[in-house]
Length: 208
Image 1: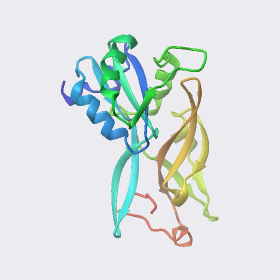
Image 2: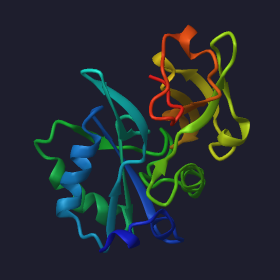
Image 3: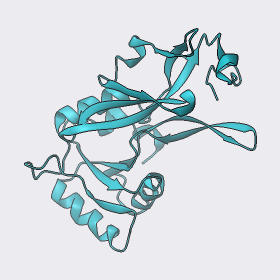
């Protein structure tokens, strides 16, 4: 299956089921790659929704993609939940990174995401299952001012801005419970960056 077909639109169509695996944090990409290597790409699409992150090593800044949902790997499939678990569970044997399929809630045995969950997630991400940085400003007091229009697609509430003002943590209802995810911040009109002890990198407005 070529890259063009691996789109959010294709894998969120009616009849496509989404399931979620709970894995160890920082193991999301490795486990997704392991599952992709084994599962039939015509029937299964394994994905880890991402956002941007400005990573600094030895004074150099690199823009990387990191998981939005820490500890989650999603599977979109044309197969039933039962067939999916039958295919995937043998791959979890002796794999300490994966804990379990995530159930919808304590009173609902289904591990398939609800239609509401799918709609919520498809509104957040672009066709590559990626959430671009949220536009924000830094006011004269060094506070982050979020653009309401930029947050409109998420439909969640802001929990906090992370240390260093690199990202914002949002909360939505997912799988029957409040769930947090992280989105990068693109800081604009940051006239007071010197006061923050930060600098603008490559005119992107992303603050380090």
